[in-house]
Image (cartoon, rainbow, N blue to C red; front, side, top):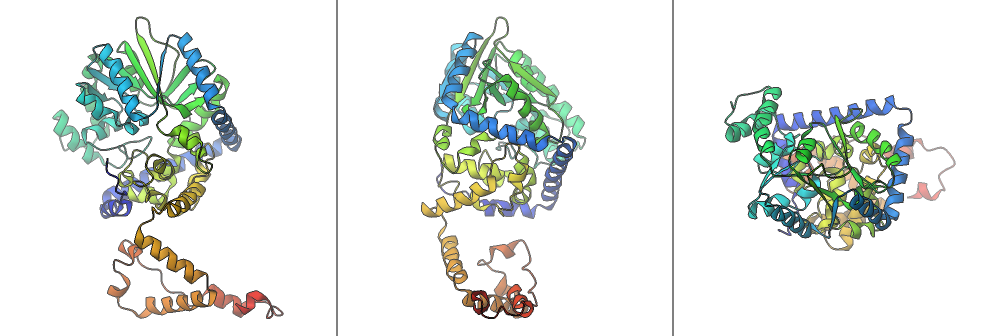
Amino acid sequence: MSERPVNHARAAEHFLEDKPHLQFHDERLWDMRQKRDAQMHILPEWQELREEASRIKEHTLSRLPEYLEQFEENAKKNGIHVHWARDGAEHNRIVGEILKAHGAHNLIKSKSMVTEECDMRPYLEKQGVRVTETDLGERIQQLDDQLPSHIVVPAVHKLTSDVAKIFAKDYNTDPNIRDPHLLAEAQRQAARPVILGADSGMTGGNFVVAETGTFVVCTNEGNADLSATVPNLHIATIGIERLVPRMADLGVFVRLLSRSALGSPITQYTTHFRGPQKGGEMHVVLVDNGRSARLGMEDFWTSLKCIRCGACMNTCPVYRRSGGLSYGAVYSGPIGAIIDPTFNERKYSTLPYASTLNGSCTNVCPVKINIHEQLYKWRRVLVQHHEMPFVKREIMHMAGKLMGQPKLYRAAIKATEVSLSTMPRFVLYNWLNPWGRHRENPHPVKQTFNDWYRKNRKPGKEGTPEAKK
């Protein structure tokens, strides 16, 4: 795997140049944000639900080993085989061994970010296992050989015309179809024979209940239920942080999840899996893959509260205008920018800078993760670990010197005003001004705040330290 830092800015440039996709992406995500807000205003107890969800998650994470052992004990009583995976490689090996033991070569699976995180599909395909995504968005991305661009809606960056071309290539459908219903039907017709002929199925898990040894999968297409019940072998891959202690806690998160993600009151299917079906076999693989290490990070452990709703992505102005693929990682957007560096600090060192730190992500998070504060803290860590690009580091160093000297700073501001008004365009818009590649520089102001303050300050303040600066 390449260790070169992801060039988010360059990848975002290509997305910004594609106006139809950019406009659709921005409007679609903002529509989900507005629907989320509408649902929030319907529930007078919304903030209390967020507070309770945050409290439950923090309590669970503070006693994670205890609750994991409780889940394992109860799950085994229910007839579930429980496996532990330290990292992605061990997860893939475990899944491969389960499939091999059953002679399985045709795996159907529903949406699972953990399997994407572990890069499972390429591993299994090398073992001779055919892996088919049954979620519509994930299947589109699989056929197009792309990572999901969003946690909840993996192909949200694609237009109907894009999907039509992909399906025409793989399903021999009409490349000029523009009706989403017809495209969905094409996927249904292509998927059903594969589902009916599968010898193994896989799901993720939105929530794991320690008290009962059960797990819950929330979907809108019903494909997870088919993946779990049509084959006799069901494997569920779940991150260790998805635990809640009691069944009574589950209602808090179910009320928050779909409302935060899509602005709908509840998912179409909320399925509780308690054990294998008659004559079948069920395996749960609990995946660490860096989560225990993150739990020990004082500034970043609360990111483990995330319930993968994508609300922070839907509201983020940077994500909405740069597209999820520009992040070069399984997890994109604000939550990705604080999770990804825990996997590979160098490779994802640019992502915490893909933010305006406006705080909107924190405001919409259903479990109250302080996302924008963690983005800022990651920047400090990356500077301390010398992971900031040389040019950015030098520019920030000069900016620090400049802002640390008020008189010099004010002189520079006045010089900038003159430059913006008089200098030729080619001097202002060049490689030293990445801001100007996609937007106009602001018009110079006629009066700075400092000038206004000096002119309008109250009498009697002449001798204050502030007035002398």
